[in-house]
Amino acid sequence: MITDTHAHVFYDKFDVDREAMLARARESGVTRMVVVGTDATSSRQAFELAAKHPGLYPTAGIHPHDCAEKLATDRATIEELARDPRCVAIGETGLDFFRSLSPHDVQVESLRFHLELAHRVRKPVIIHCRDAHPRMAEVLAERRDVTGVMHCWSMGPDELAPYLDLGYYISFSGVVTYPKNDANRAAARAVPSDRIVVETDAPYLAPKSHRGERNEPAFLTETLAVVARERGVSNDELARLTSANATRLFSLA
Image 1 (cartoon, helix red, strand yellow):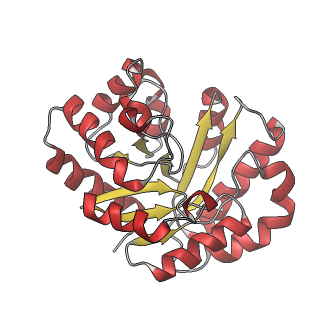
Image 2: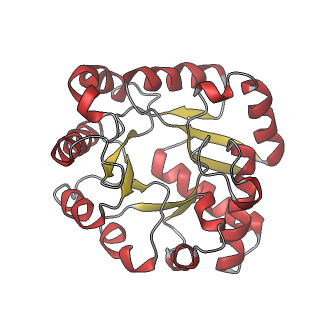
């Protein structure tokens, strides 16, 4: 069993072949997916899709790209979905100072809202961080009663310490397969065995052999193989380990 801890398989990019895509995932061994919402509408879509397919688990959150527009309008819906027993995590939330599609202060406000919500409902958070590492570490440290996962870790080993100290898990995506990402592979070697998980971020960030294509959960086997090679373990061993970690993190069945 392989667990994809972050996928957006409700997106319209999958409308033409969603059932076939999910079948390919199962055939490749990816039998569980955390289906991640990015606003009220997509969070509802995640719940609707998960209700139809065993092994899919929904989340509720507002992406930092969208929070300037949607924090006020979507907040109540996210809180309602977060309280649903089917919801396994809060997010995706976080800080993105690379594209800065929402003002930085609004992103911080949104992140704090999600952290407070995660505390209230006692669920983990899913964190997006791009070019915002120092500020992210500061804000997360304000809520030591909350933990979760650093989704799509794109940095190296040197930045891991604040998040590991706070109890966060570290998730690796297709980015770890790219030839120039030696630092990211070094991070994959450095994360403790009880904190590492894997993801696709589908439809984004396809691994090396599919780069430029729409990503899908079946491609997670390539990412898993690279991380396993770096850690000196078999693919099967890493699949078991990362799935066990995902079970613990998200309280999965």
